[in-house]
Each structure stands twice: as structure tokens, then as C-alpha cells.
Length: 339
Image 1 (cartoon, rainbow, N blue to C red):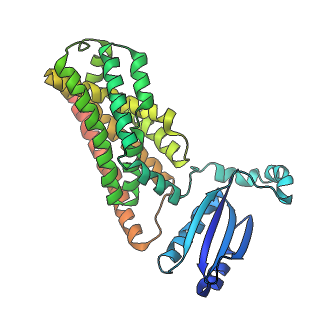
Image 2: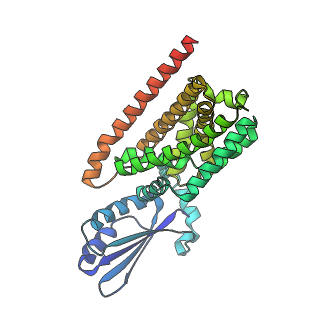
Image 3: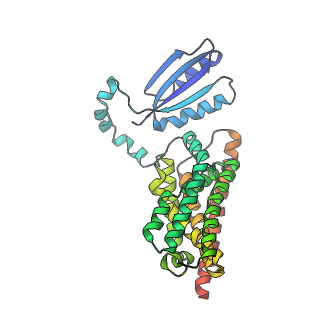
């Protein structure tokens, strides 16, 4: 169902003004009940695309009113007299909705913020999955087994923190950005430690295609990273399962990181340089695509100080990443000319 339920607990002394304002928003159903002697409960059933505007208003109110609370609840099923003829009504309104369908669909900013904060945290599950995927990927490269390497990318949770970095950069949330960046670097560090150990204690697998392909970088790797980042950002915006899209992001991050660690462990600095350049190109390309997608989606904060911060952070993030990608492209071209 394309509906969500907003529950608002409003102190009695502020109920009349807030209730009058809430009724002006588009809604499917509206209920009011007495929660206690001090608070009233308002339930508003709305379309998903109407949620963010209402939550923005409620966020502003919550900032100044004590005892004010808001809950957002997904609606799986809703049955009423109107729903019986809903299919006919949707056909009649199809032409009016063509313009809206052409926009980037997404969940509300508040839902995305909660998801980004969750993705930016280092947890035991995240650590174990990174550890296991690093072991599997390294063994897969050593055995020159493409199937094993793909299996490692399936379980690698590398998409979350990277996408969260781009999301917080757009909003100018430097605390969230820093936390997500630390989580991303933490994941890469685990992969490097595991692969360095394998590279140091064995030289098997250092000459096969799975390894050698990840120690070379060309300009064609930039579109791969951009496509991965765009897919990851779109999946995040729509709160879709990140498993399949996460594989695409892991393609750009996990095997090159393993090749980098194996090269360092083996003392092959030339190969390590190529793998490091590939990892860097992929990360910056993913961030460039994600930042661009989030900017186009219209994600904006509502509080004045947050708006000002986002207005500065958004263009700076895009410009900074573009400059880094261009520098990396020049380095790649220069390296090819030397060869």
C-alpha cells in the first residue's frame, strides 16, 4: 500500500492551533482522540508522497513544544468504502499523475536519515560480515575462482557506510558524515589486514587473472563506479533491499581492496599502487554518483541553521569529488602514456 500513518501526541494547550494546521494537509483519514488528561492523539492517514511535508512541520513544532511526540507507521492494509472504487479512480487520475511519476521517487527525509544513521554505525554484525567476506574474497582470488569472489561480494556489507557518507554530505551533517566515513574506512581496513596476512604468508595466486585484473586501472573503471553509486543511491532512496545493489558496489570495492592488501603483504609495490588507485577511483566515482542522485531527489533539511549548512556543503561536496575524479583520471592517463 502507498499509505503511511502519522501519530501525533499534542499537549492540550497547543492542540487547537496545531490541529487546525494539520487538517489543512492532504490526508486520507483523520482521527482525534484523548490520550490522557494532558495530551491529545491525532492519527493522520496520508499518501507516502505527502508524508515529508507534514513531518517537516511537526519537526519544527517539536523543536519548541514540550511533550510533543510523533510516530511514523507503515500501513500494510487499509479498507474503507472509498477503497472499493480506488482502482477506477486511479485510472481517471492517471494523466494528472504523469508529471509526478517522472520525478525521482523516494522515502521521506526522516526515514532516510534514520537509515543513514543506522548504516553509519559499526556493529558486531557489520564487523563479522566484513571479516568473512574478506576471507572468502581473498581465498577466491588465490584460487582464481570467480564464483567464490562473487559469493564474497554477496555477503560484503560495504554499500551502507559509503552511501551514508554521500547522504550526510548533501545535508551538511558533518557528525554523521564523519561517523559513516570511519565505518567505511574500518571495513576497508579489515579487508586489508586479512589480505595482507594472506599475501605475506603465501605467494600463491599472485599471478592469476583474478588478482592481476584488480591491480590495473583504466578510465573505463570510472563509469563502473558511477553506475554502482547511482544504483546504490536509488535503492537507498526507495528503501529497497540493498543486497543485490550491494553486490554491484562490492564489485568496485572488495576485490581491489583484497588485491591491494595481497600486494602489500607480498611486497609488490607496483601492483599495490595500481590496486590503490583502482580502489580510490571506485570510491570517488561511487560518491560522485550518490551525491548527484541525492541532490536531484530534493532532499533538504528544514531548520534554518541546517539549511544554511546544507546550502554550503552540497555544492562543495560535488565540486570536491569532481576535482578528485578529474585528478585521478589525469593520473590514469599519465600512467598509460608512460607504459
